[in-house]
Image (cartoon, rainbow, N blue to C red):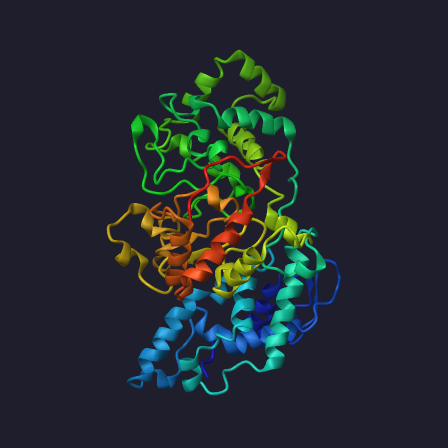
Length: 467
């Protein structure tokens, strides 16, 4: 067996982080854990032991390979297992680092659930060399129980019917808490072209409410008709994203709102002073703004207002939401089958949660070289690496949310995919490592179309993308 460089104290700290509990006895050897609602988390210690013993070696950086990894033939298999394991899931990052001050991510839970339910870990070639690495049934049950308990404690919206309460996708809430006065000001600014240097482009130019929160273009057109090299994601339900932008360079909606105005290709303002000088000349807007923000115009106040408005851009009450809430008539048999195939092909390992995505960063070339097959090169292809500077983040992108997906094409960060069928096919090949045959693609697409919701009580506007 591969053995990690792990001290007893480090192991104890890892156990604490794994569940993200509110109160834990961290003394070495103690494995008592309490969820925020004070309910004991059954089998917590056993799950942690399983992860440390069975999973961490191939899913965490800084581990020694075993002595027999140098044997010709075996060496190549082990090195590939290690590389593939890290790209699929870095447990030290996702279970330890990411959970120091918050619960385990929804995508991490969904990934662990999927591999257990489908018995794909460890892979067959790995177990041929590492005898005894297979998980016994009791361990599998313990992990699935832990996933269910963690999901219920941290991510359930309380809206799903009991039969669907443990689904990786949850119904959208009807609304989020917002300051309505700030949101009203934010809506004005979101649609104000004076945020751009030449007064030609507003936030709404690339994120139009009548186009599903996008512009339905491969690349958005900025000032002076300049084009970027990345597809504009929808602004609807962006409030649920763990971070903003494809490369995660913005921590939240407010930070994201401050990016495009200063981007030389998008809106090309020089600074906030330039923008404020124009806005301040509008006496009516200034009166409205200072009523809500008594300290007056500033970049922080402008982006705060826009972010508050964007919190109102959520789209509940899709047919799939209604099905999750218990209305069995909301979906057809084909659409339900499509959802089951969506889960079977591993799509729901990343497209999770209320927004059906936006919760993790994944490699676009996880199973096959998407970029070589596509051809050409874009600056945006770096993905997360452009923000972190880390080589291991090359080609990692924030998983897009799939709410209203039938209205938000074209697809992928490069905007090269124009149909839902092709999007499903490509995801199967490059992310899931599976060829999805036409019948199943049809079923999955039918399910995806049930994710279109409502905004302010009306069906979301936009042009339906063909299959």
